[in-house]
Length: 472
Image (tube, rainbow, N blue to C red; front, side, top):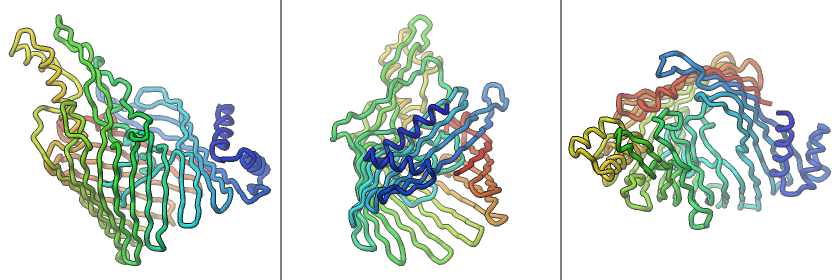
């Protein structure tokens, strides 16, 4: 492992600095304890070490088990070549066990270079670019992939990096125009990934758009800053970070009338999105609002992947009084061109469904069974995208209090979907006994009635956790 870290460190340095001569000088200076180069550049090295354990409940035996137990190390390098050029890279290594599988991975989370020329700045590389001002919901956040299954208590860790270019133009002190281009698609991690499925259900390699320039995604953002409020306008044209699930192959044993193979594939789809948000501070209060219109580039078809157009919106009010923070709000969604689903959502086929077809015909037509599966997958995509109903309403609340000179923080976020009666609870407590040390414990839970998305994903994901993080 020491050799692996050494090679990763050197690789990160070479990736971070555009000129080998600069990187060599900075590396030697860092080792000698002096981060200043013979020129004007400097290097800072940091990172963290984290150990986490998540304890869930085995649905078959109703016994507690180690859902996730791992150790993680991060190495962050920040470089300043001059006032015009900076760079950053972060390498992470994680080893342990998660969802019953051995984990041993090395990931370059971010590596990018920044260039600045007066009012124009440019960032190029693998980076995280988030949109929206909402705390829990971001209707404009279509450009950044997410991993909601990640077993880390810090909310910002759900964001995933992707390769691209960001450009900014400052239009005075109160306005800024930004443009983002993502030529390579990276999808979000679906909540269903940890869910055990029947042995005949297999996911083939996800469909990925090509590398031709017309397959890229781009976004525009216009920011306005005033003494009264901050506001932003958004436009996005490209692939939604959430992929749909489509059917690629199906095989039925004609003797036993049992499925032999149900092959599925994650497939992205293109959308257009226009949105806006603003935040308004009022003494100890902050009011935020965000909304977006989204429509797919293609019409919903037989593959069942393309969602209906929709309008989503959120408002929230935050109150800060010393160590206490209260935040509450509403999130809603309206589905345009809505039609009732024609089947129950499912990712598999059961014997009862085959028997129903056999009652209609002693030898069911395979095309009828395939059609039924496609309808179920269409409904599942609608369930995942929350388009089973024409309108959705959710309420959320966050209570946070800091005690003992900010050494202890207690947080209790909760989200309630009034339409589906689903709950997301994330209570936790953090203890910081010294600078750079955080001990966090809590619970992550998804709860919903039978047939809801949270009823499906909650049992394998619900867990209590303990995490220790040391930052250096």
